[in-house]
Length: 146
Image (tube, rainbow, N blue to C red; front, top):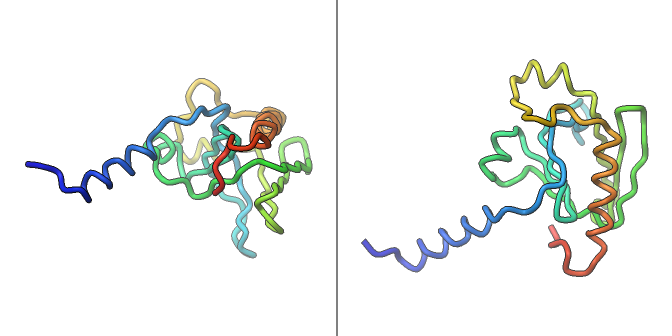
């Protein structure tokens, strides 16, 4: 049977979302919930194309599901909290501060996530990747607004 125009559009839209964007770094981080009683949540992060995005699990990222959040890294400001924890804001986050912690080994073990060859990354590796991508995000047209 022939595809209707609407089916075509929806297939193309789906296709557009699955275009591979280069990922500089991916892995688990603890993210502090913005809610008062939320605590820390294990999330899967990807840094690439001048943005950082996060998913509920590595499976979601692999399936190219819609990320829980995606932030342009233009205007990145990082503040280290400890050897493993850091906060960041960008031009687009307004008053929202993202608090992340790379000390995730025990949480990852209990979650059963497959980490792949890189394993758990250090906060230094994450901050370096964020800063490198932020430099890319400054170029006009390098990153799409989210």
